[in-house]
Length: 94
Image (cartoon, rainbow, N blue to C red):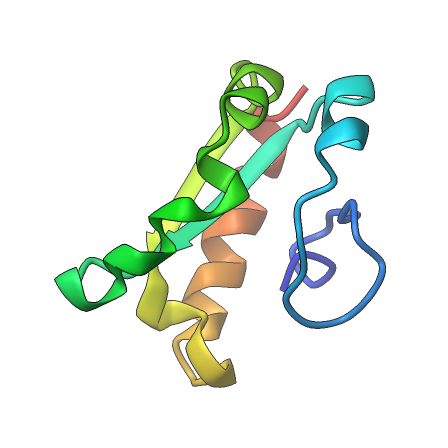
């Protein structure tokens, strides 16, 4: 999705993985792409490193693009909406 929207991600490996906190401090992101599930059922994911203060500081000046979690789950047809929203933010990033 990130590549399809015209960006280069920090991680080159496919699939889920940890955020590279040290790299984010050295090279702050221009855009932050977020997708959270709103259901109380997903509250266990609040421990995620994306909520870490270092991430908040490193991404404070980044363009924030948030989409519903359902748009990116399991590569469903809604993924196109997420790519389009992320691509639309490209002109806003520095």
